[in-house]
Amino acid sequence: MPSWLHLDPIAVAVLLLVTAQRLAELVYSRRNEVQLKRAGAVEHGASHYPLIVALHVSWLIGLWIAASSIRPDYSWLAAFSLLQGIRGWVLYTLGSRWTTRVLVLPDKPPIRSGPYRFLPHPNYAVVAAELFVLPMAFGLVSFALAFSIFNAAVLAVRIRAENAALRGPQAVLHGLD
Image (cartoon, rainbow, N blue to C red; front, side, top):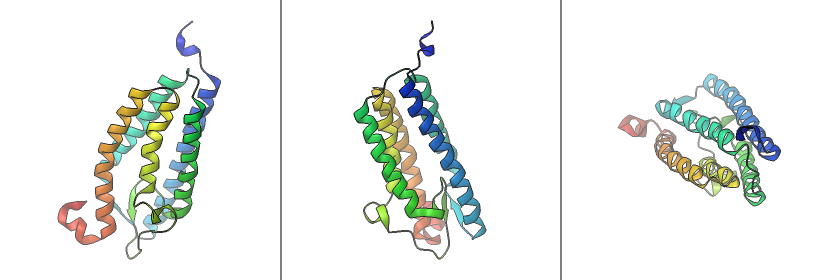
């Protein structure tokens, strides 16, 4: 019998939950994008967005392929669960301003409450940790390291664009977007 038929039910449950979460977040993001654009929000850094999508889709598909037959380590899953709490805090804090894109409302200051009191980009910190921690739960060290490196490269571009957008039009005009 092929090894891919030996699925671990806990691994599959974890991957189903993460997949459902990511899909729900895309729906939530899209709803917020529509509302923000109606309110006059301007998108920044759209050119790198396909890289983010490709990274996250590849990560999730890769986990389904590499991890669905491996019983996860519960301590790593606990760490991942803790990250989900922080993710929820970020989403709650940003509310209708949370999206997967960089959308800035003119004349609205950046949010500085919740986890944004402690870190300038807590959402990206959570995502970076998730991209490492979940593969580690399945013992996929090389996978975790590779996607962490790819994510760091994409985030370097993303954070630069977002910081320029949040500083205002002058930063964007000077090529920081």
